Image (cartoon, rainbow, N blue to C red):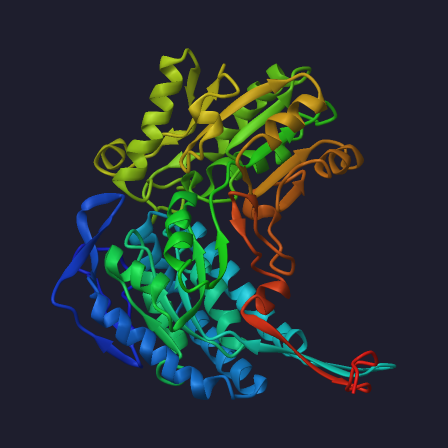
Length: 499
């Protein structure tokens, strides 16, 4: 793979579908623009047809017949070679990701870091996680194996396209499955290139990549050869996937939306500048477009005024909105126009309801800001607890901050949400942990939040409408298997069955 490192308009990348080890052209292509400069074309990706999606699924089904029989050492060795290839191409991948997504360079490097960290963990743990267990006991012998599940349809989102593709690819392949990946049309290029790198180390058909419109997604979720769906994305889309897959009752791992709360207790030290920086980063990293970002902030009324003052100071120090390729930039554009307009509508609605909206940070290049999908980050004060900007997932650079009176109240406000992906509690550790135990969330972090508190060694997923199942950790490998029990009982006949 060759990707030029500069970001001039003349450097246009084209990706194709990857089916059974071959690049497959399509009759039509879609254009991916640079969100920092929408007049610049970053690349082209195919409009895969339904028929090509079927070919990819059938190729994966055929490859599965052989791949499932390979030993774990071979699978791990192939994945480790792929990891080294990704690492060797990291700078090129980062530049492409930054151009197509809008992430600042440091953020794009961070995504590769998370992806590789997970892939290496999966390689290190796969043999032990998938090893069959044999128990001899008073009743006979039992063998428990973790068998590959089959063809996996992996549908990844645009906000972390590489990390949230490899979170599926690595464990699925290590467990002996084959996969068909569909990247998001809002960030299809870098994810497809990384998938191609991985595919180069595996037999044809083990990894396939398709793009395309809704009919391709429908095929991936309804085709009887697909036995598992791994999806990261919005809750509303997941509802359609669940319905589409119901006729064939597929296994699913769904990591969905979140409206993650950050709760600041009375014991939190507002003069802790590093802590204030952490919460600002937790709100605005990747321009607020992370499922596990802190999207609503609750502060005990006794420290509320001081918190807001120190927060604004910290935000104005850290937030620098500009060209993703400028090393001074910490916040880039929103990824796409649709998302920009949605976030704007939430902020405007809050204003209409009487909220105070405070712009944050410094715009480094006003001309660039005006031409791209940029939004200046904002702090929103004076909201009602049930205003849309509080209860909906903004997925952009704005955050409401609300006071609370006591822990019972803030626990209720947290738990009444339909979501429960991550949360964070800030203050004295023992107090924070005590409150964290009462929150309905897949992960709760103490005195940090979002990616800063992520640990790929442990399960990640959500309560309620934030998802089904878990990724990461040993469980994130086993979720791509079926448990197979082989019983060899000593007593072959039931004692009470008559002759």
